[in-house]
Amino acid sequence: MGIVEEAHNVRVLGSGEQKVVLGHGFGTDQSVWKHLVPHLIDEYRVILYDNMGAGTTNPEYFDFERYSTLEGFAYDLLAILEELQVDSCIFVGHSVSAMVGSIASIARPDLFSKIVMISPSPRLLNDVNYGGFEREDLDQIFEAVQSNYKA
Image (tube, rainbow, N blue to C red; front, side):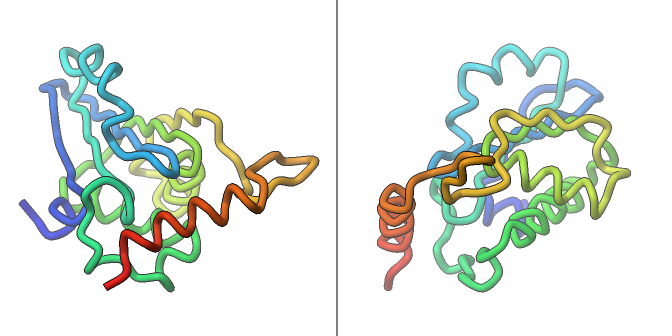
């Protein structure tokens, strides 16, 4: 297992030729796909991973500057695909991972045959035109995430 796979708790299940990559939403981890995965593994090779800061990712790998933008998460997705030698995949992204997949596909369109976006949002902070979370809710989420990564 490579360092990127280990850092993101990458799991590869199934045996199909076509690869499906499942990216979870903010505040969750790859376990959100537990009811979907059994329906995919007979036909697809399913790749699951945790975004840095989610699940049981190692806090030593977390870099606040890198992950201050979605591009940092997109670079991680591309690194996972590269380490697994994925040349084409169907990417299914929920919430923030939908946006991460979009950014990654702009950088490397050759790696994505299809992108399925579930409830993507261009913003976290609520906006009349775009939706999002209220400031108080975001502050609570950020506080919870940061408390997991304090020494």
